[in-house]
Length: 380
Image (cartoon, rainbow, N blue to C red; front, side, top):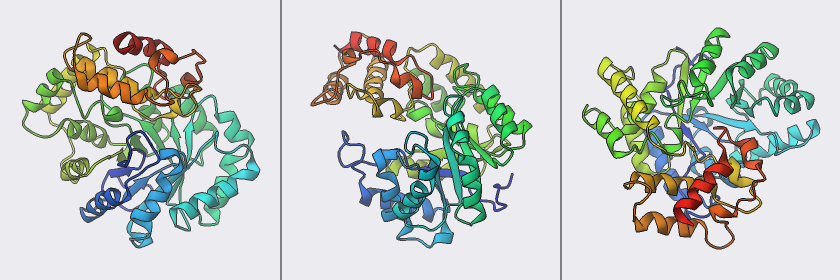
């Protein structure tokens, strides 16, 4: 399938939400020099699609893209996507200044694609009431946006309602991976089918579910390893890219090794064979039997936590300890990481006051306060 603006490009996109950091406890401390090396290899291997949002890395992602990409490469050599995010502006009058600030931070004068960000049943009324769709169409008419779409975090019936009401949407970005394919909270397949029904091309986010499918537990990893045909991440990315309606698969790469691996197999031959599809089914069965917390580390939850709990990091510590021989693991590394993630002003898992603001913004619809109790039982 051709990309929506009628040019065929390689189907791996660089998601700029998990760039390398100078300080692992400071999400805004992006290592620009490492990012340059990663971007350079990505471009050198013929990949050219970059995705960001104003809130990524606490506002630092767009600046990093300017330093590592747009200052250093001709504008027609890459595709750039940014987003209009509810919660970061409060009225229609703020849309233009918000958008102009994004262009300035990125160092460009137009965007190839602009998405209304994380659209769902809770914020749709705001986007419509403040005339966001109409204003974005004006920006498109002016040439400042070349294509308009949405990124979507909700159930399939909500997506269908949105596409009925807004035929101007050209492309839809959804969470899609083999673990969430039939998962009732995410409904990857159902959302995919709605896009097919309305003939909307799909951009895939979270193909490795925040790294969960790139770092499988030992038994699940062994299923893929027995095929001798690629990394754990390769099966997840190829599963997404092999779907007919999918035109781009984003990967939030954090180091050069991930760039090397992903670009090594996302060039051609993306379709999975019978043995690989069977292996994926077996991995899903294995993972469903685990008690891992299915967090994708988007950090939407922790951004507004009144106790400054590093929720995704604590969930990662929990998952890692489970992988290291279960709840009774004596892994000092996991305990040390938990201590680091709860140092200074950051709350422990048992600091949660059950305000539940985190649940309002969680794309995975996780029962975060309940899960923090599990983390607390393990570490506190």
